[in-house]
Image 1 (spheres, rainbow, N blue to C red):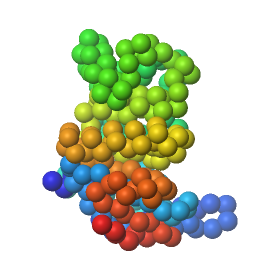
Image 2: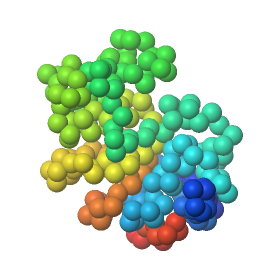
Image 3: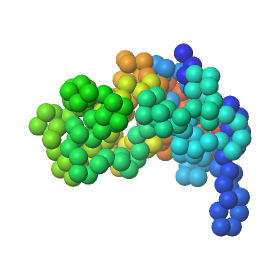
Image 4: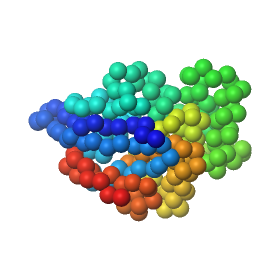
Length: 223
């Protein structure tokens, strides 16, 4: 089922010296139950496109539609809280919260009762391979791969239909990177979520159901 669509979107901004056309007239659609990879060199526009899909930026032209409704007409904070979980390369874990508290945090913002939030957080952590002995560890006491799994668990616990991941393996070794990709693919294929991964790694992209290639702000599709 189609859940998200970019309809002829462009994004431009002005820096100190010139107008930059970061994304130019891109159209693409995304379905639940599938994993997508957006690939391209640095500066190709892939992260800017992900920002628009995640509701972090409004297109300069065109529309991003979630279930046929333009994102610019929605409460974008609520969209990211309830429907579209963004996993950042920098992870954005709270350094003074434990692993389980990091996963619980967005649930508490949604008004989920503490006991339910704790159970959902613990279940999500287990599902990505975080052991109970690690639940109460601060991020600084977890490896890079474990921290990335906590960030994914936070997305899982939210029950978001959309999972958008920006270079989720960029700071990981091959083994941990492969494990993270496997988790993301499982979310698409077994939990019927729509997973969109921005990556520069073509081997990781090859694991996706569809590859969207960005170049100079424009897109070419490969399948």
